[in-house]
Length: 303
Image: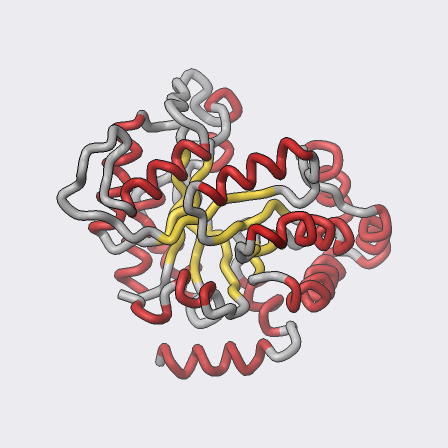
């Protein structure tokens, strides 16, 4: 569908990529989701469709990704977790997604069901994220998990996650194993400290893999404090917390824009997590140096 404009081709050309997460509905009506996604057409290179995040039941990410692509001709990245499907189910879902034209996948282990809205559900976890990456790579090479030849192979653009705040040897070794499993790009956890990010980039530069840096705009002083206290792997520096305490919500957008300006020449792109506020993505994109031309150009193409 997207030919030379596909996500992987853009990454291979070294373009600065913008992706954004979009909320999946807890119900069968996608009207609101389509309208949210429409606001991001021409602004993002792809939309991330989450897979029952935090183990809360939502619509199938594959179905939604397919529908958004068909309705809006906007590229998507569907998340796939190991939590809800066994080895047969994972492979079946992947083949179905590819047949539906959804060609970008982010492989995740998945949150434990006990954290979500159906705590009695059983987590499957036949494999972890590394095992899932190997499965997708195997399908790309024309074989199933058991080594049986497929009637036709896939060509997924495969993504994985990383946490720049964790530079331990164990974390870096795990990331290397993911890259070896055929990964084409990394999307990171939210980062707020440039020094931490650059240390991470330096640590993995030999892997030669595009990094899309997670950007979670801070809505308030309270949100920043809660992230530090309650979300493992996220570190909001004290000087940013103080700025938010003084200036409030608008400063959160300013902080995100300044951060992106400072890192954009060193990374493959950004992955914005707007927490349901898609207008934030457009606001951030429009305020980045030289981004106005990119936005104008894309809008002309999609008229």
